[in-house]
Image 1: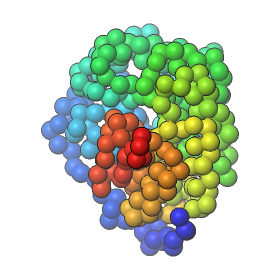
Image 2: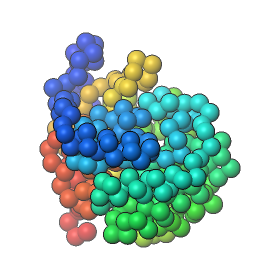
Image 3: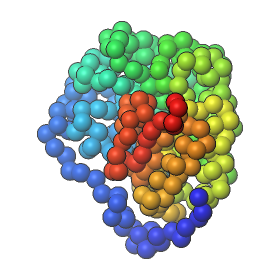
Image 4: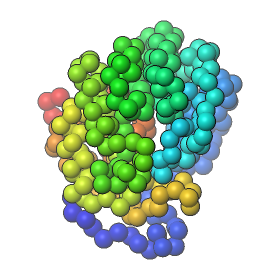
Length: 309
């Protein structure tokens, strides 16, 4: 994919391009909010100010965030609050399972803040949440989206032993930008995480997500996709980075829907089993459809399995 000229007018004026408009709240969204609030569980939808919250909650789906809502890291793209978190809540696995059951989810996505303050970085608590949800909804598929655990094999093993269907760890951005955008993370370490999951349990599908519009080049996007394939990553999501506030990393470029489609075609040709690429695609957006290889549609991007998969 070549580097097309950026639509700089929108960036200079602070306006979003016309394809970055979202629906208004409806009654179904309010019902989902009621279930989430009743369970006392956090969601990345709210904590990270996800632009898809209206659409997803209107479809009675949400991405749950465990281990509190305060992160020990300070990524420059992320809206989640940072600081010293509280100890993990012992009843969180049960409350999470109750909320998931209340929504009747067929595909459950569980993520967490980074907990570098804990001895095992929250891996055992994460695993307990997966097991509790599995016991409550045995027919549902479960996708986990944990931090990197510093690529500690014992932590990754603990979570893999809970048998999630999908192990999703986001690379987030290209290697050159990682030190500035994710100062406490490491690009190569994230790749090691994905490789380790495949080595521990090849039956678990690995997945990763990439945000674009942060100043990367087309060649760097291609290189990142190649690196993900080299470590066996099976599913990839590519979405437009949107600046949560003026204090966060700035948007350098807005990619058009057509450019996202080009990236989706390129990623499929590289061997990814499923791809989702679009302006509003996020790592957990339409995750169940992406996992099953079902097309998402023009508003959310594209997804699909390669011929013969």
